[in-house]
Image (cartoon, rainbow, N blue to C red; front, side):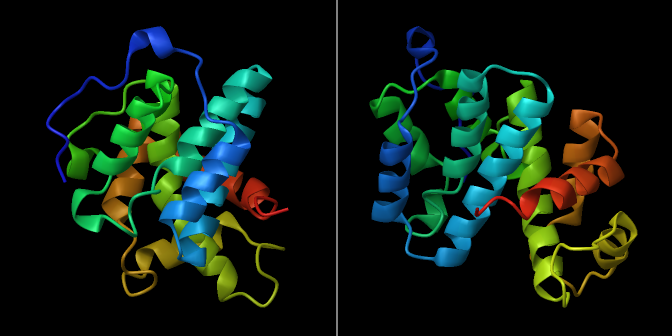
Length: 197
């Protein structure tokens, strides 16, 4: 899956984005798995919420949302070359290179691209954690309501629960973002339930 490069997109395309219609159209063409779409929508929502918390402009909030929404767009159809296809597609469409770099760096162990910008780091931080917290919500009678950080952390220690989620990546992403895991978990709990509204 290594991308074997560290430069993505053209700097002259800074600020260029897909419209929401175009972005969801791409997902409709590429993704049939509803659970995967839920995951990407949740990560997009978390990124937009975080950018909002930081006081970023609506344009920047939307760019963060797009990075989260599209980060796994090629996973279902092209798992062996995950990230290659979506990056090529966004480069072809002349999309903002910061969005493309964030997608390219959301799994540094797999793609060989280091998260550099804050957008990069937060996409990496929310990706695995979002899926894990969602899995936990599905086994709780009240879903996200009343969920606590300690409950999530207890499940993280249970290697048999949501075993496909990399605890190593969660810890690494937390360290790179310089945000305690507990704080990231709390943010996901507070915001993720509204991702599909």
